[in-house]
Length: 245
Image 1 (tube, rainbow, N blue to C red):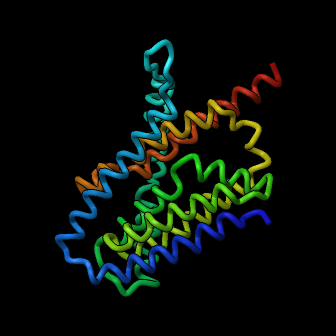
Image 2: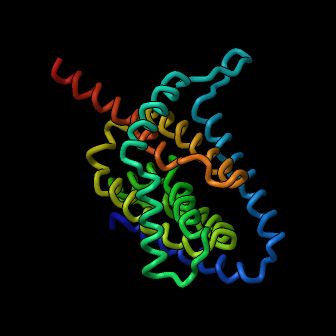
């Protein structure tokens, strides 16, 4: 059944968040600080690994980088679009709404946990490819694998950032659910190059998440999200124009 992978993802993130919340009270503040710092370094390493994998190739004993100009252009245009829409503020407002309606935890980290977890769980090639496989082939394997990783991350996130992490499942449902529903329409445009370009930009955003952990939320990463989808939109526009000319 299409959507099975997303359902599994949601359930495991809720379980992981619940475990993290139970651990939160038992963890001293000093240890929480150290955990956040180590998580920041781990997140930045994941992002850096993704950047190298998506944009660097070894040829003739040398490492060559690709898509650099594309990345700069997409980041500039995508951030402009994101700032105009103000995605970051909208996500924060959504987090504040959930906090007011469903949470007795008035911690200032609620919105940070919600936004951070939403970005980590949704930015990356596994979310895209897994949702496509689930929608087209009815194969949730990639999303189930991603779900296990997300569960581990949600334990750590929730133990440091609180219950806002659990509510990130709403973003997972909307994001992965839309891709799954639209899979048959967009899959012809998701070539290897397009996926690599999207993963390149997504990995930069993941590095930014690690940076925000170390230096408070100084980067409005949600406002940069449109940059990740510009390679796909550009390729779709090229393909559609090519059909008429």
